[in-house]
Length: 339
Ligand SMILES: Cc1ncc(COP(=O)(O)O)c(C=O)c1O
Image (cartoon, rainbow, N blue to C red; front, side, top):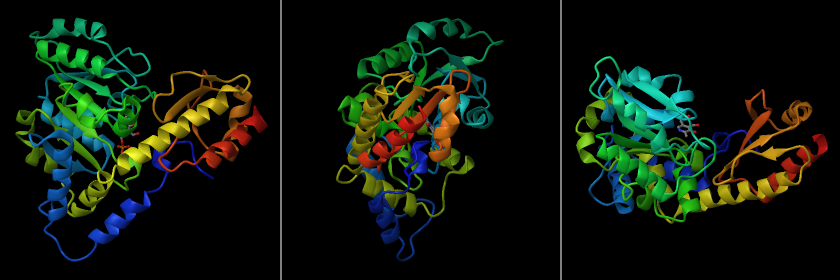
């Protein structure tokens, strides 16, 4: 039975598996000094232009930690949505490894606004307060919404005018790109984002994320921090081989398109269920749905998913790159039976 609990519950795209298998022949220099990693970096340069720095890592949390570690000094702070993965779901890893504070602010469907950031500028120069330095936004957000390009530009413009930097957590960046119908570069580098955590695992990779520096000055210490944050994976060719495949023939786009389309299909089905409410616009591959309390356990017994807000009986359903129409229809039959 296909899971709707998380896009991490899905397997690996067969083409990615094949790419890993192909890379498993012969010996290659380790720690990223191999031809696969060179080629994977070139793939990123094709997407974003030559003037970037890229480092491959194993998890999304690591991508965020490494991004932020390169952007911050220990007395500085990150401003992010209360719903941000870096704030809520990384067991304090960014704080531990950077020594920096994360300042959570209110949001709308995971999106933050400069009006809510402005007051923190008053702390700048005051030694009793952590010094705001980075604004971190998530694209697509943890609640399934997508920032428009002009919304990102408003944040980067505000940040840079005030001496701050912008990090984007792009664990689901492919889903956002499909929704915006844009190339990755248009709403990241062209929108003046400084550093990007570029996701892969949630969209068909086995394990692989990348940190992409558009502001290369920030990558001054990348080779040391890459190792110190324990992400300089010795057999890096197996991560790089996945990215080469992922970024060839638009595999990323096909996968994300399917996930987004199937999320829309699920939302059409759920709309017709009684006593349920879809809480946020379905703009990527996630749905947040208020369910009748008494139905939750019965549905979970047949198809497990997480309740993200117990008090308001709100479920999170995530659709994957390999979810099929019939998976949605099976899940819908279970929902209908218990609601
Ligand atoms: C928005 C976002 N960022 C980062 C991550 C971290 O990824 P990982 O679990 O691979 O560390 C996740 C994972 O759920 C996520 O949803």
